[in-house]
Image (cartoon, rainbow, N blue to C red; front, side, top):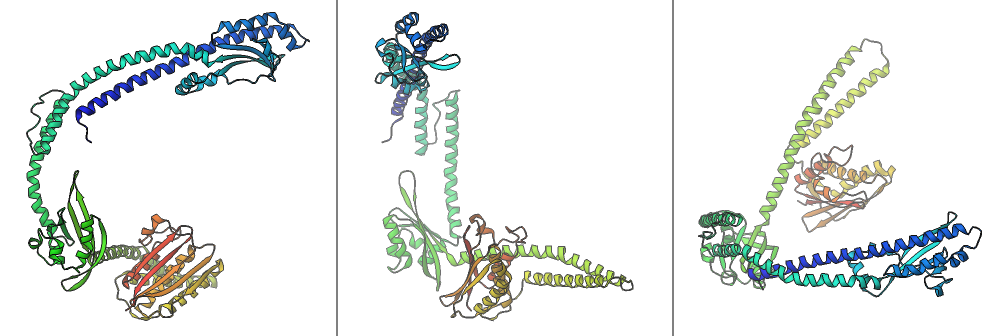
Length: 602
């Protein structure tokens, strides 16, 4: 139930007034209880010091005698102990006990020479929070003690203990508490009446503004003229007038934007259909019209059962969702569009305003076009990155190699007629061979990085994997790496570039070995999915890849290895992509990584 502003005002003022009076009273009572307990402790401390002083004098004058007997026979000390009970209205007993707890002198002589355990100290009562201290004082009676140690010849001898009763403290506190509560009961209605009067004065303009806002909501934009004030309320009324003028202009603009929006919706590749709450088509764009086989004008106002056959996939999936008001999220459909079977995703969302449901929106997405677009974007990004890599290598590697080769030949010519060691000539020959080998490697990489045609031929993937696995295992078996082959003998041959696939498999296996510096097992498996897809899985037991890095491992130049170049997996990704394949990574940090490569069987 929605409360009116008047009701909210009354409730708010009541709660606020009661809260202020209650908090003020509670603070006063908390301070009052603390003062009463502190005064009682000060009185008890004074008595305890007097008893301590007399006991110290008595013990000092009776050297060599029994201290306990001397204290019991001291009449001055006895008189002081008896008088202490009347000195403070809160004390119930006063005693001197030895270090074992046996009472030597007591205000009640019948309790002397009895072992009496100590009660909680009064400082514990003072340390409680105000609520617990107040509850403790008004609960059942308890005794708290003030304790003062007594020494004899510099060694602990006993204690002076004075007991204070919470019942006696409560008796002194009760009158003040009663007076405070009575004052609070008197102040509460006065404060409430005063607060209500102030609230009426302050909330009058707000009620007027509330009515103006309601008029704006109904479409009446002439508001705020009754509040020509110079204070903050007047500023708010002026802002409300400006807001109503803006809303009026926005309403006119909305009508123009609606026509423009319809034009934008019509050019979208995704189909969009808007339904009324009772399941009738309100509007749709041209892409949705192709799916339904009806023009937007023909479909407007119609129902699915009137426009589509009972076996139509859209009707079968959408009609139950609309009737039950259940949202759909990316439901797969196979539709006949322009004579072709197209795979689509359909989603149904229900639109509501503050008070009611205003309809539903159905989105039909062509999955084939989405996949094509994503593939083109990803491939273009990779090509651009590889282009930058190629350019960098051409300038940073090839030119220095040429310069090195030229100077090497000059050096060889200069030492031809100079008697030098044979090892120097051999070293120059080795340097020349290595420079030429590095040049061939760079040339080969540049050739691979540039766009090229695949040298397609029938390839036995199982035989290729066996060859690569044997090569890698021979290199890594010294550190305990073992490769297990689980190859499907029924796998068909691929139409692929054998050298590029060899390079891709070699890079993946090398990465798996590097992820297991202490050795482990790598499982290489193949299987056929359907009749047109070959799956190759390479699973290691290495360190794994953190989840936040999985999306970046195929990014060019990205690497987590100090000596890595960030090229290997990028090349693998491109090789698989050039063969119209897909590579996926599943990894659990600390348990291992699985690379799954899907290659089409042509």
